[in-house]
Length: 191
Image (cartoon, rainbow, N blue to C red; front, side):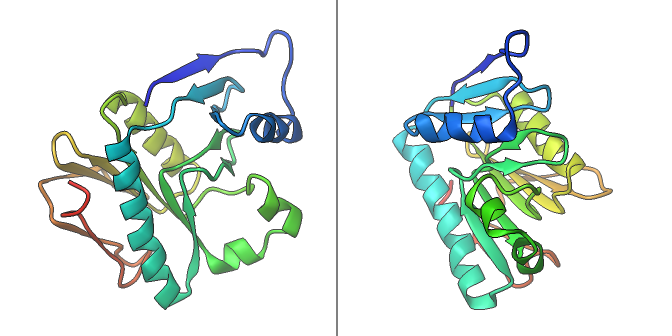
């Protein structure tokens, strides 16, 4: 996905409500905002990446329907991270007790929390360096488990709190470990 970063900080610092409204007023565009307040405008993904994203989210959603341990979110959901950034992982999951602690207004806008689990699926036009930086930002803001899926190389980078990144070559599945007990992502449909 090609992204364009725009810095309006010298003329306006958007509040959270203003940024949310900007996103609502331009629903055909996808925005993120980094911790410095810069707006990131992202293009839509291609068909292959969109299909794979749907598959990842579907597998996570189906598991969660059985476990009822949390809430699943797709790539159109923005999260207000503790560092001030507004980010949209390709798939995310939040423990139910954390979600239930939010007010209805917080749930209706960009939830002011970092997901417990996040997945980024590298599209052909994505920068691996930028995707890794995003995964590190998620970890610094509270993600407990994160997966960066690189379809080009059929490689997965696993991010865990307090541990070095683990890189797997050509895995066929991934375990949700103790964060998502019983969840197994089948990668055959993703590669």
